[in-house]
Amino acid sequence: METNATRRAVVQRDDDVLTPEQVNENWAEVEQAMQKELQTWAKLKCFSRKPRKDARNIIDTRWVLKFKWEEPTVDATKEGFTNSAAAMKRIIRARLTVRGFKDVERTEIDRYAGTSTRGS
View 1 (spheres, rainbow, N blue to C red):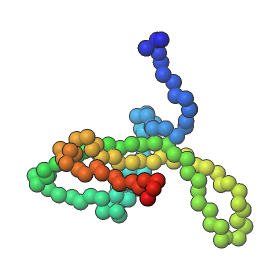
View 2 (cartoon, rainbow, N blue to C red; view 1 turned 120 degrees about the vertical axis):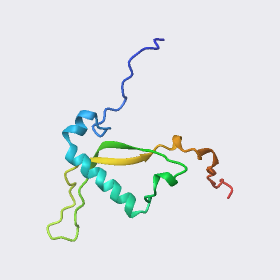
View 3 (cartoon, helix red, strand yellow; view 1 turned 90 degrees about the vertical axis):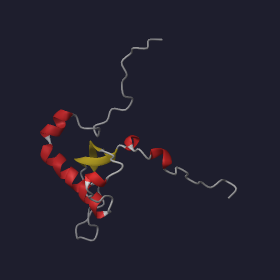
View 4 (cartoon, rainbow, N blue to C red; view 1 turned 45 degrees about the vertical axis):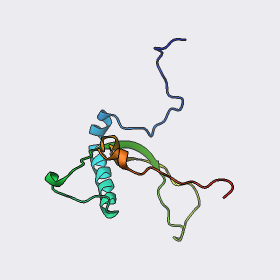
């Protein structure tokens, strides 16, 4: 068996992670997607600003930028509504991810996730 063979994706997709060239080409959309993600985090109160000198555990983040297919919402109450599939639109989705492996307290976090058994 050859160990140095080139791997190929089984499923070819057009909604994958953006390349650096695609980020540069679509910077306005990327910036808009990043802003939307930060607004979501702020609305859900996922973070708060603190002085860096008081921090005991600093964890950095990374942006994941992907193309996604989105179906536009249609108002079914409006006159002339037809139940046909609306045209799908490819958008850029930005997700801010926390790099948890850098968490100095990761060994102290409770990881128990209780699940029910078939008998219960």
